[in-house]
Length: 168
Image 1: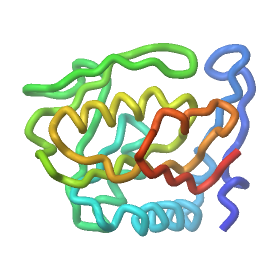
Image 2: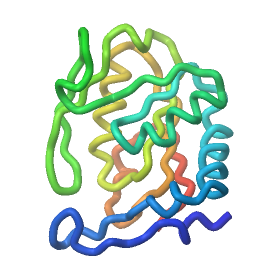
Image 3: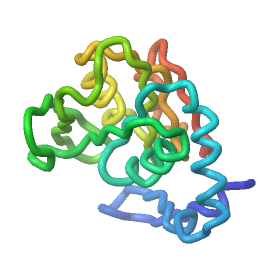
């Protein structure tokens, strides 16, 4: 299936100079969404845990975890998760932020697959990898729907397999 036809370009969003990749058409097409989630599940089948960031990583990571009957661990922006959390500041295309993950959701030696929608500069996912590794777990691979090759986000993942279903 050609997933590119389900991704729209939105110029100057969320600010001037940004060419936003809108995945709403893919989400609104049941066949394309099913294909995407099942393809990601094929690449994640040997993981112990699936991790995804708020919010669009949830859209793909949670159904993949459900299909595989694996746990799903959320990574969210600061102060969105209850209990004890670990934190990591990160930078991305047009801003910076803090990510948090609950402690005691990932354990030493577990094999983890991170799933997100878009690889741009790689800052968000690199911060997630740092959070996971700080818990002693092993990031096996990172799976994206879309990789924006011009932004060179792939350069941040030395030694970690990266799979992108679409490259633009």
